Length: 246
Image (cartoon, rainbow, N blue to C red):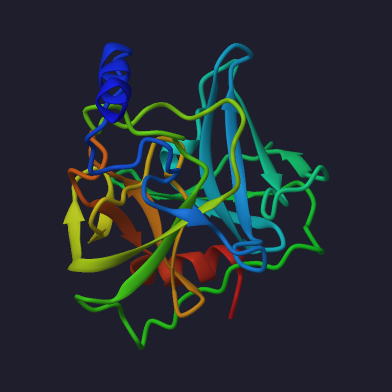
């Protein structure tokens, strides 16, 4: 009976031997706790026929921290921010992004988006204590609403049309900040059989309940390459100046 079941699965083209669960979100993650990540923002860039999803973090009543690739300035594209996506609820808070983003520089993939109206009932992420920098071996928690599955060859599949609950995953820092062309100051984190996916970029990397990083990208194949994360400490002074925090 067991042999027949295996043969049937193989006949249907279903892999029965994979190191990665094909039904895990943020590949290898789990649902974020309902009391955390309340500041997570879903960003959607649309031209009317195509929607590109991203992550972001509310770090001030009027400002979202994310990556530059989560913005398009070409005519016909619009951007909107959706708050209160976690924990999942039927009540979302949506604002169109009207102002051009504040970008650190041409070779740095980090930006700030300003909301049209301040948000008063959503807690925001705390900036890091950069006197206590991340070290090799530090654990950061990543989160996102990216791809729902990994394919049979561990390739990352595109994001689902209907986001599932926000997924969290712990990764360990193994390489401290370096300059990466077209991205900026990044550090690297990884964990066995865990990865971030399409649609997760822009989300926060949290350590000690503070936002130490912003997800920049991961490898083309799930769990084959580490995640690259922008080091918020390298940009903290710029953030504080932009937000006029003294």
